[in-house]
Length: 487
Image (tube, rainbow, N blue to C red):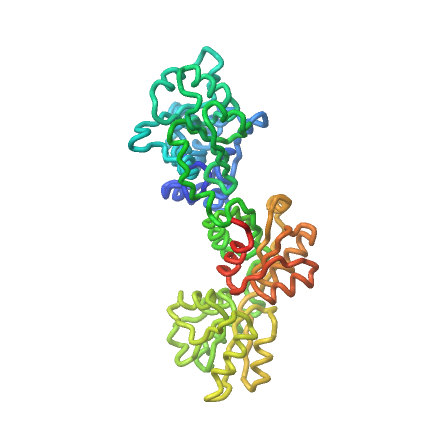
């Protein structure tokens, strides 16, 4: 097997390369450091071992010799080992030392380059490292060498004389000394300078100054320093996104939670995935199987959730067996789930709640009268729809397609709640399960609800609902969050 030295990129998980994702998917062991994005670990198989060797400034450290020995030992066992490193493994990341140790031990290895923070972080701050007329070169240097000492391989005078853009990685702790040394070497004190802390992350912060004043900002690592005329450019885009810097808890079940979290991240938020609901097969699966086999004898099949769609169609051998059955969906997400099976919903109400679906079905039935309806849904759900249809003369079969259960509380994720601004509830079950697991006191100050039913449950459980989506969909909920937070 092979040891892969993989560049994780500067922080945004979307900057991992396709090759990096590919080898992570087949990993037996993932060895990762502090600057790697922990969400990337989810790309490895659940059973893969995850080993942290992070180096904290002025804190616990794993020596490089120990990391080298670990990689060699694991590589000799025949396991697929992924060494996940921040940025690029060969750009100030000591990947060369790890590769040399593996080569000396006769262990097969592969380098998977990553996007270096030297280029990506300035780009996320709206700073191009080159401009055609003002900066036609850029120099990348490490800030780990102390410029105050007369030793080391870095010639600061040459760096100052070269011109163009200077990018300093890992230089936060020595920022003042670096700036003084460059000024002493002849670089103008008024040269534009910028420092980008936690670049490409939702909590990115860009500080703009001059070479003479940058160190007054008391930088904290990790920070990327940019010095040169280009540092005056302000082509901001990343920090201008509507939910930038907001920490929002997502309570949906997997994999829906991951999809919603990805949407939030694209809008600039830091999404904390804390699923408060999970789906399991119903107690009586055979009943669902029989209903799917006999689906063609109904006039309507009514779906109230995407999960109900997927669980039902798992047991429908041939879509043609639906025959002339008309299909209704409670909203666009459920309609989209039907589309995955090449079915177009015949009916979607204007408001995405059971009451509106009941009204729409009754209106649709007026010319021909009530018929026979199949409703595959969760075992425990509101009875507004089936009771209303039965009262209107419909022959109603409610078939449990799945059960909702509460996952075990996640202590690691729960520890993040104290610093989280908002929580998004997408169903009554997510409210109930979250409060039961973590308590009302753990709920963030801003409570966002997908619709009136969820809002009512939240209030019944003692929560103050801050905002409710006018369109009762995930997209509507995210839009409501965008409207709520000031830009």
